[in-house]
Amino acid sequence: MTQNRLLTACAAAVLWTAFAFAQAPGAPLDPQTMVQMRVARLAVELNLTDAQKASVTTIYTNAYTAGQSLETSLQTNRQSLSDAIKKNDTAAIDQLCAANGVLTGQLTAIDSKAEAAVYAILTADQKTLYDSMPRGGPGGRGGRMGPMGFGPQGRRGAVQ
Image 1 (cartoon, helix red, strand yellow):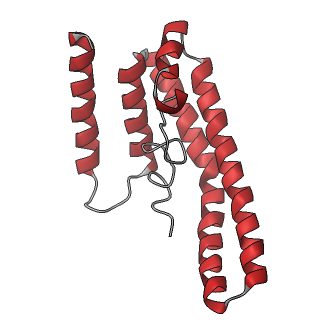
Image 2 (spheres, helix red, strand yellow; image 1 turned 90 degrees about the vertical axis):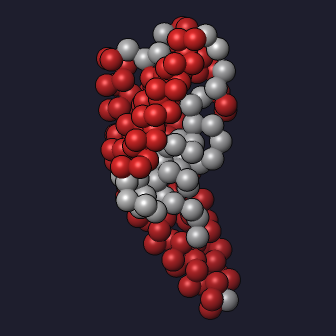
């Protein structure tokens, strides 16, 4: 890693830490903060221009907004599934699990389209950097847009 990239990575780490500690202890991050943190990370990793940062912010904000009603449906589904388990209602369990799969698939589609939109605005050099990141992109593994995205570790919190 060159000295410039090392300094930039350190600056991003400081920024991430500031965002994290700005939240109340144990409180989930608000959507705007999650998007800002994600864009800050990409800005460092991919050397984004200011125009690209603005576009990526819009893309991720729109993806979050598009998934909100699905997230609510998933929360309701999880509670209903918990209730069905306690009642040993196997028919309801089958139905709720199938619905969970559909909802999760819809969220995956929203996230994948957002990643495709981000990839489309990158330069050839940035695409090479993006492709070398874990999972072939900035999200790594771990759910909805990765650990710093909106996934189980990001937006929804741990799966109950």
